Image 1 (spheres, rainbow, N blue to C red):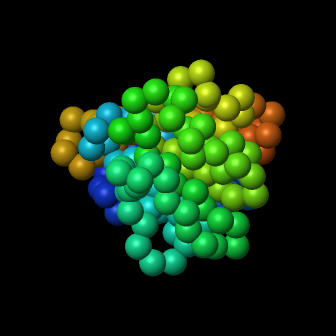
Image 2 (image 1 turned 90 degrees about the vertical axis):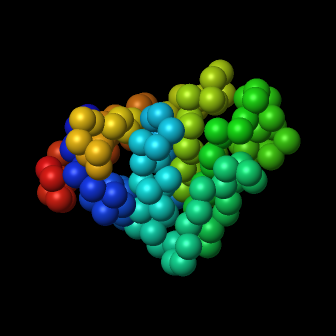
Length: 158
């Protein structure tokens, strides 16, 4: 597990970019945090680090955006999801368990559809306006290698 303090939106983006640069096909990254905690900024960084070029926007109204890169990046925003069953209409399993990299904002809304293995990232606001505490925890044997990756993080604010 890594607990890291981001001091700015740029720090959060760069941390996400570092996470994205360490992803591989089939990775699932679940983001947890309150409204305005920085999930979309982190998602943008992850997508760019995974090789996406251009704009990365939160798919709040469409639920999922797909981006081309070495491995496709599937960016979900579940804020407007009423019930986890709604994901069946999107054939979410094709994205979660396929060849791409999956990023999910508002992952707590997955409820019983939460995968068994994933990289869990929790973001919370700190007392200073732009500060965020980011906690990264690998869940499951597939993500065991992330423990070493996280120990080697030497970015801004570490």
